[in-house]
Image 1 (spheres, rainbow, N blue to C red):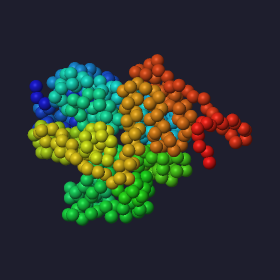
Image 2 (cartoon, rainbow, N blue to C red):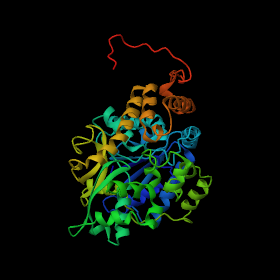
Image 3 (tube, one colour):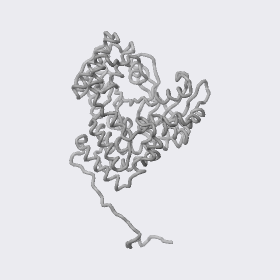
Length: 465
């Protein structure tokens, strides 16, 4: 059998067809067999029809495809596995957005940090580990390309549980952000020399040059342009105050700290553009697509054609390079083995990676500017607790992760966070069977007042002035 690429979660509305179109643009890959896997037979059928039409329209006569709901069947003989899954569907997403909102925690996307990201880790990581375990059993030489969020948590949990897995986590925020800044500066991105590193959705552009000229001063000036600021507000605040561009859109970025979403007034001020700029609960609008059947049917009939031109997604570039095509540098999410020296060892970092026929080699970055590393560590604390909570099946640790989340901590007391976490866990029972029989214990809410005398007992040995 020739090259085999498995796409798990192939029934997505757009993403799997985008990946397939990208793969087929390379001569080294356009005779591959693409195995489509999805648990939803309807979505899987649409995905197959769309791929079949792509093969015809692109004149890819040698490529083949198959469809199955059984991933273990698809993994037989696989060389590469692409994972882009959603566990729990819209109901789980609605619960993790609406319940925190009731307590005043206003999320836009909630798939990376915040209560939504933590709950998504709890319900998704066991499935991702299951995929990795099946790969090691059935096709141990295959490389797993993970596109599923929460990216850092899932990759961390997989390589911690199964260190031998060949894994890289992929996102498009680095490509999108660097191209956006190049466009704002009126320069072709191909003429830009940049360095970007940090963690997923919060990596930092620490070098942006053309012909040796440092362009960061121009970027800092543009960040204060009201027209640019209004369209990308919280991200521009980072540039304005911290001096370096950060990846990912403002909607995501606004959730990762306590600075922008503490009150409805702040959301209105710092997320004025709506949608990806930070509209409350935008993720629900994104996933609640009653027209998905109609859209996929139009794609299958080619009334709504898939763009067969290659996009900037990294997945196809990696596979082509590993199959002997042109070597590339991508930005991947990998284990921090002293790659970024002032971030915790073994956490998941997003760094440049050199890819050729010998595989994926993460490149050492050194140290980030101290304040940028400190901002990253605020996220990493939550990520580690969420991963360990999932692996150890420990609900107290879930609560602790919620407490350390910067947005949640800026709004709620510990008592309120515990109550919210209890409610979230109960709403997610169908999606977290590993916690069956376990409950998060409630605690008494104690209220102090100077209007009443309370006897306070001191340690006899305590020194008092």
